Length: 296
Image 1: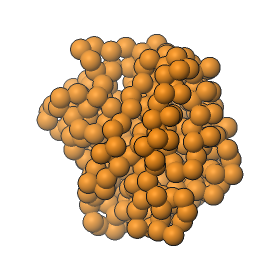
Image 2: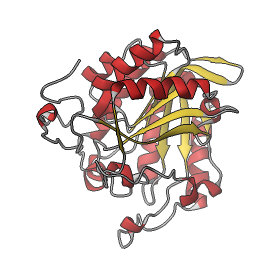
Image 3: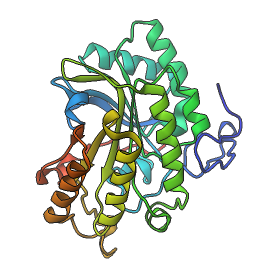
């Protein structure tokens, strides 16, 4: 499944990664991960009591100026691993009691992840697979994932392209995310849960950013009108100003409690019943994982 010219993400930059050329995301030919382990800070239907088996992949197809995982998305920290090592990680996470395998920011390595999943399944991997993504996905790439992914966990970050361009260098993000979520829905709905854990389904996250309440309302309107309660909505208040957002107004501030409570009430008034909300303590740097401090 090796692609000579990489067009996995919407950038379609045609980088010859096998020849050592780097595309927009900065990834080369080798898999690089920032960390892996049992993760207890996902939505309760994913983390359960044991934790989600998260594998954080380094590099990213977006350039969000406020990124909370910037050490692996921008600083390129991480550890190089082979496909066989990735397979072993999947099996170890299952052995450790993970409720699922959580592929975090995986798009640019998907041509190597899928063979690793095949090998792991041949050796007994049988827990759900989560595709944890920014929402900036090509439909053609998502079609490659059909039958592999049980739970899609995309963000829907922006309604207006001006903010998508300003904050993530992706003016086409809004329409791209809509199309991506549509494809995800066709693959994994209707949702299936068992003993409080999601086994199959679609959770759409929205991180409320300072000053972007209008965008948040429009996204919530769209998701309810299109999918109603067939999806799960996750409204997040955990935006944390980082040192690299100092002086960038309004991103140098946290989200106001009143703004977030308004958004939660707004979603409830629309009719959302399948939804998660956060308390204010989530907006702390202590919730950001530590990553391998190795550069590729």
